[in-house]
Length: 139
Image 1: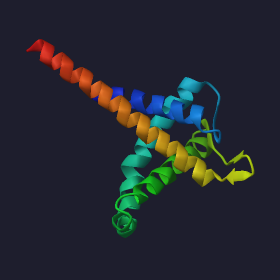
Image 2: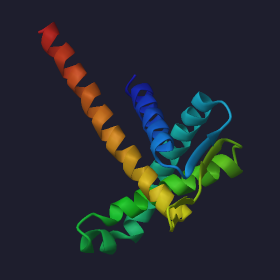
Image 3: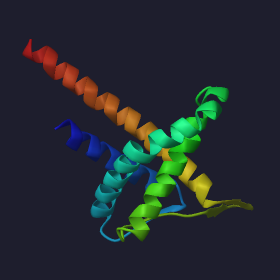
Image 4: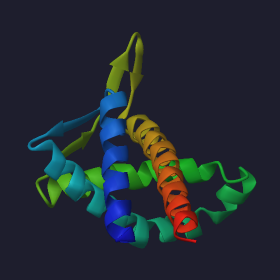
C-alpha cells in the first residue's frame, strides 16, 4: 500500500512540475504519462541516483548538500529522456524563453526537480500525519 501511495504522490508532483514550469510539457493521455513517468523516475532514482551521488560526493560535501539539487535535475532530465526515447511516453523537458532570458533544458529539469521535491515532501508529510492520526484514533 505504501508503494502505491508513494507512486500517486510522485505522479501528482510531476503534474505540479508540468503545470508550473513552462519547459515541461506532456503529450498523450496525461494520467498515463504521469503514472509511467513516476515509475521511470523511481527506477532512475533507485539505480542511477546512488551512482551519481557517489561520483559527486566531494561536490556534495563542498556545497553542504546543495549539489544534490543538481543531481535531482539530472535524474529528472534522464527520466524524461528514457520515457520519451525508449518507452514512447510524451513527457518532455525542454528549454523555454522567459523575457530575454533563455532557460536551457538542464535548468528546466533543475526547476522541475525542485518542484517535484517540494511537492513530494509536502504530500508525504500530509500522508504521514493522517496515518499517525488514524493510529491515535485506534488507541
